[in-house]
Amino acid sequence: MRDPSIRRSVALFRAFLREQTDPEHCYRLLARDAAQQLTRYGGPLRGRVVVDVGGGSGHFTEEFRRHGAHGYLFEPDTGELNSRLNYGLSSRGHPPAGAVLADGYLLPLADGVADIAFSSNVLEHVADPYTFLSELVRVTRPGGLIYVSYTNWLSPWGGHEWAPWHYLGAERARARYRRRTGRAAKHTLGENLFPLHIGPVLRHVRGRADVTVVSARSRYWPFLTEAVTRVPGLREVATWNLLLILRRSP
Ligand SMILES: C[S@@+](CC[C@H](N)C(=O)[O-])C[C@H]1O[C@@H](n2cnc3c(N)ncnc32)[C@H](O)[C@@H]1O
Image (tube, rainbow, N blue to C red; front, side, top):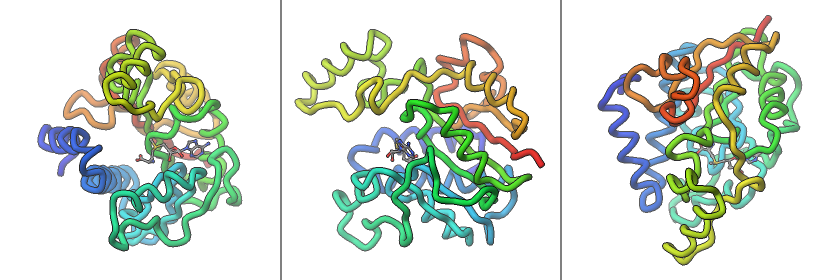
């Protein structure tokens, strides 16, 4: 599906709504979409080395491999890595072969080995996003691409499973989630979810000498994808999920 297009955004949104009941469909669609985005910004993936950092259960890595890339998955949490075992009993329920248990702050990779460093929806889950970003940059070859997306705190989805009640405060939103579902929330602010905004991250990447910003855009919106990120204040609420495409400087 063409990006951006209303059809694509609607398909992604509908898949998100079914994320709890049909995660396989949701993440496969998202992975296909991400592979198309990478192709659009950096050309065909065939033969490219793509490192997927914080790749969870590996849908993205699998999709990159389907496109002929050398896809490598780095994920620090065995629970995330094996999460498909809980909902898929087929062989597709296993993480991709060769997945590496590793922290994105300290990747077991030499400098400049990746054509593309890819990280989807991880930045808001790390306490030090700039060190995490620096590690992505370090492992990317000069001229290579860095794909980073995250849901910012003031996005309507910023509170993740307790959104949009995070606008009333994280503690209240978590308590409400527990009351309503009878389950403890997966995310705790300051532990595995951090209030990351758009303005400071844009200023940070624009100020770095080791990357240029190819695009700063809304990942899922069907229109005004780059325009929305240029408006301070509005962008914090309306971008929904920031996608940064960076190029490693020579
Ligand atoms: C919301 S999930 C995103 C999974 C997948 N990338 C996606 O887009 O569906 C966040 C992931 O970030 C991972 N993560 C958290 N801290 C990390 C770190 N320091 N280094 C690498 N990954 C981390 C988590 O284990 C989890 O798999």
